Length: 380
Image (cartoon, rainbow, N blue to C red; front, side, top):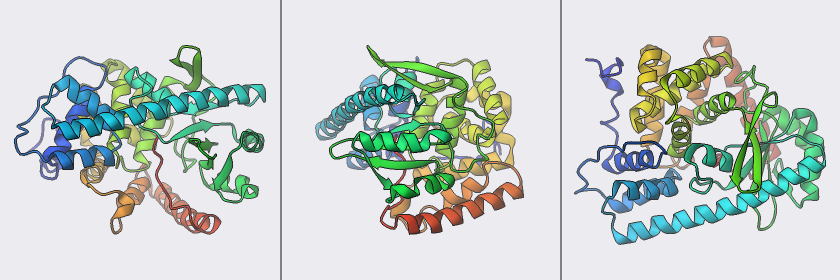
């Protein structure tokens, strides 16, 4: 028996989805800047404490709070108060991020160092029309590889110290293996300094992020450069796919960004992502958006994405990751699906073999370079 998408019925999410997660994704979708709202199920037996824990696990408290207001759901007072408190904290962190981003742009402009802002508040503004609704604990900036030494010196002058790698003298070698280094300053937000958009250089291999960009006004007088729309689409797809979409927040950002776009535009963006080496990541994102958030369904049908065996396999992996209520690093062999999915992001056994070697080398070498790093996941 086939589903409405033409994919086998075994891809149904209902067998592993809880009522709490169903309301979570419905409330997030209701926060998107588009008409229509999801149809709610019976909430009589819903465990609200579990719902709150899921919202925090997926880092979508701000979206969830806004969406529940749109849906006019009768939320228990304690849960509503907790979500609103989290939403205020997210907004306050967003204001701090705007201030930092403005300072960073001014400092890099003064030093004649081009930079782009990735994810974070620029995506919040573009996707939701509100830079303060999505959670983020860091600021991601991208510089050209040749500018890495100067960018590192500039961050040190601004009071930041590298923690990945711990030894700043190893920064060049670190960036040859990793897409970003991590910098901190007392009392400030973390900065992730990127020199490429994906850990595997074969992903997004034809993308020159600085060849065309867009400016985003996040507040009056604060305008930040970020990726051109078609590059941003491909990048967000690869970013989520590289972690097997284990956090709903990443999928919501992608879905909200395309929710108001026409079928033709979504299909054009997917084809362009395929040209850039991100076709499977884009297909995976669109399939999850259709299945969970009610976005891009017609485009998924027209493109025939659900009929490809690898796409269906990736969809199952993503649904399983999203359904798990524990963090990947908090369960036994919890990152296995993530590592496996990374092998499938481009066709061919050659890519899979090279990606496996990259993963193994990265684990061994990075652990030696920073044994106390903890290997946390990106949260922008």
